[in-house]
Image (cartoon, rainbow, N blue to C red):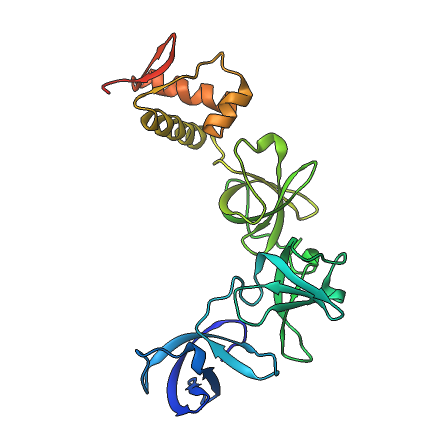
Length: 278
C-alpha cells in the first residue's frame, strides 16, 4: 500500500465507520462511509488514494487529488496560519506547506508550483515550493529535438519557466512564445538545447525544417477552414496580428504559407488567402 498514490485494494469487511480495504500483503486501511457507493460490495477491488487524515490516521478516499507523491502541480493557497499555508489539492483535507518549505511567505488566494512529498518523521504528505530541491540538474535524459511534457509556471522577463517531464527545469524564452500560455498549463514542448548548468531551453513547436513547416501548415489550414475557406492575412500583415490570430511567428507563417502555395492548396489574393477547391 503506497501513501500518496492510487492503490487497487479489496473490500474485506464492513464497520459502522465504513469499509476496510486490504492490499496483497494484508495491510488494511479504512474507506469512510462518505466515499462508499451503492455499487460497492464485499471482495470488490476498487481504486483509492491513501493519505493521513486530520487525526493522523491512514485513510482511503475515492476522490482524486490534483497532485500525487513526487509530482509537481500548480495549486492555490486557501489559508495561512501559524503552521504554514494550506493548499487546495482536491481532497477534503487541505495540504500543508510548512514555512520551512516556502521560498517566501505564501499568501492566501495566490497560486504556487508545489511538489508533493512524504515527511520522513510523521509519514504525512506535505507540499514544498522549493522547486530546485526536487529537480535534476545532471544526468539529463532528454536531448535536442525530443518531445517533452511541460508544466508551465512563473512568467519572468526572460520567459516562461516550466517543469520538464516532472524531473527537470526548463525555460521558454519570450522570443519563442507565439501564442497565449498561462502558468499552470500542461502542454507538449520540445527540447531546444540542454545547457551545461542542467537547465533546458524549450520551444513549443517541433525542431527541424520539415516538422516545423508541416506544423505551421496545419495551423494555417485550420484557421482558413474555421473562417469559411478564407483568411485575411498576407506577408504584409503585422507580426503582432499574425501571432494573435494564428499563435505562430510572422516568419513561421510565411514559411507555412509558401509551402501551401507551392503544394497548390491555397491561392494568394489581394484580400488574403483562399483555400483551393473550397
